[in-house]
Length: 221
Image (cartoon, rainbow, N blue to C red; front, side, top):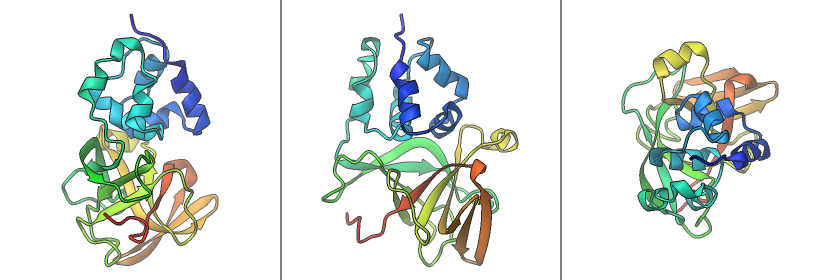
């Protein structure tokens, strides 16, 4: 019998995220999250790392809260407390008006964290899928970002976009993200791309989360 996971609902409240938002980050349907909370579904091994990232926990922190009948996950999920996950992206040309990268929900590999970043579950990285932010970042360049520190105007940001009914049909289980420079953060968020130079306004309701990109002076591998 599967055990209830009431802590999942409590954690969503703590980090101010909806069931829909965390489901989108994990690449699964929102009803699956409700089923986990109610004890009608167990978490699968491949969902542990995406859920830990979405809940802003390390993998060990999440595993410690799982019910006894999922103890096998401790053997199937790698414990990487001192490494930064490199998130997988779809390797193809992408339309600039909808997103910069499509995240697959999988971790390609782990990068060794530098001094001061060990054990930080809020730090992730991805590869740029286009050159819209060149010369700051070119296609294939690494972008390292943190989820717990709010970005300020002028910072570079990774924006997770909310999937509406139209985009869900073609994005399927993939997560759309944009990498831009934050120019203004009011009711609408104004961001800038560099190549070509272009400002875009995004309604806050279309943003699932916005993460601050870390500078190379903060991240030295």
